[in-house]
Image (cartoon, rainbow, N blue to C red; front, top):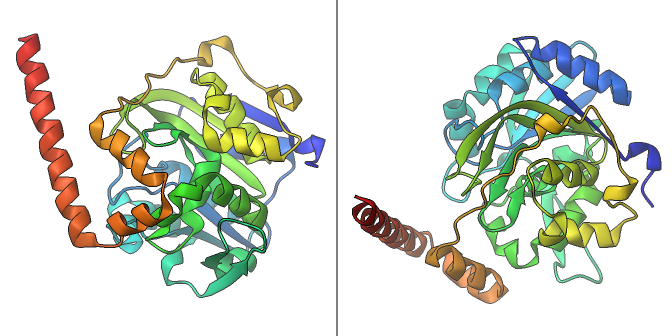
Length: 325
């Protein structure tokens, strides 16, 4: 059973440039202060900074600077993407500069020592996770509020997927609900700070449209935060597989969550992803673990498929433009 005291989500608008002050105020409300070694997990799903897709480097700078006032060591950690190096992404997104300028450091979790976690009764028999996860005093999860073409919504829980250091974690997509639940229980993030300064609608997590919201959401419970966040953008959490799975696994549902700071003006009905043929095919692939491994185990084949998808979408786009002209 989850601690009832943790089922609170605080929402606050951010005006002006005092982001550090706002974070300090919100963290004080939930009673959190960084101590010892702290790991900060942003969403860095691209090798360049795109507002609404990648966690704001300014938010990371402000958070790390605040944490360094009381914590000995603040680490901003992320893993390699399927087709890009996290080390390159740290540089290109400005995340490394932000972390180091604030007195922290970055860590490519894909280069960390590994700990093997075994499961007795599970479709996923084992996970290899970075050793640092189990050495720090606390983990702070810093996702972005956005839609997702394959999971409908990407937020606090989905951001934990990046704790798996293997760039072939895509193989785990057929079991992603269970994997995310296990990651939550293993990592035990102390706080989730959602970046909704600029969110993303339509075809997130990387191809969507930015939505300026100027909000930050904070909670000790990432599931509670996700249930509230989906409500703000007009989504039904019951239609989001991994959230529905976790609600069934816990005592948490929307009715048990206290929300502080919500205003009707924050509500914004997000435009859902356009589900085209390539997405439908990838959905079908993800239904079968063996097929997922077959398709995505060969980078050369994946690159060819990506080029075919790009050509298909360009062709569809040109036909639509001609029809509208």
